[in-house]
Image (cartoon, rainbow, N blue to C red; front, side, top):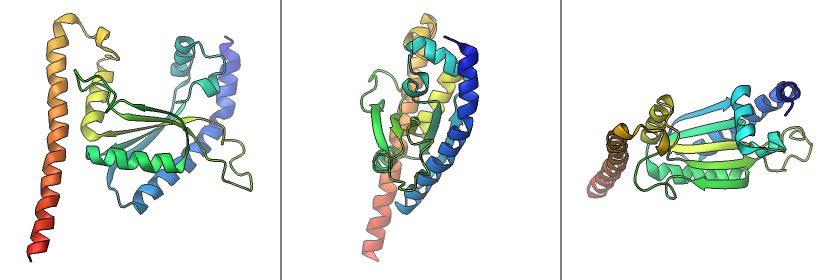
Amino acid sequence: MDKSKLLSEYNDKKIQFEQLIKIVRYEISQAIHRAKIKVHLITHRIKPFDSFIDKIERKQAENPFWDIKDVVGFRVICYFRREVNKVGKIIEDLFDIIEIDDKIEGGDEKIFGYMALHYKLKLKDKDQEGNYSQIKSVPFEVQIRTIAQDAWASISHYLDYKKDSDIPKHLRRDFNALSGLFYVADTHFELVSESQLEYVKNKLENE
């Protein structure tokens, strides 16, 4: 692997990455607004070159700028779990889907873990004037999760616990217990919100 050549190509593509960020962020924001869904935050990032190289080596990627589909990444942080699937449907309508990884419904049941709905995507070939010509084949990732899921993932990442085997054996019980507390909090925020909506609905019907 020629790192200097990859770095040069990575730097050349940064303009494309930044253009892609503007288009995708705008489309997601507008679609969520039209659907009248309130979300906590929409963030984006370009994967740093060192992280890009590490992933190329781990994945043994032969075509790095296609095989590594999260060089450009977005995260939509929702208040409640019911909004995660709603935003997911919006994402599926907006872009061409390469891959879906549901780490919420399909994740490890034992711990809260790194829960999110992950999409690998590319722009739809819908611009007849070719304004997307330079970036329509650039893949990107969108992660959707709740505030509680994001908090847990951030703490886990800060502690550098990317998988169960990274956790020291004497800390695993405490770690799993804390994970469970985040899961319970996430679940009960949802229940409280649903109860509030039901209360408001009943109140309006009885007035």
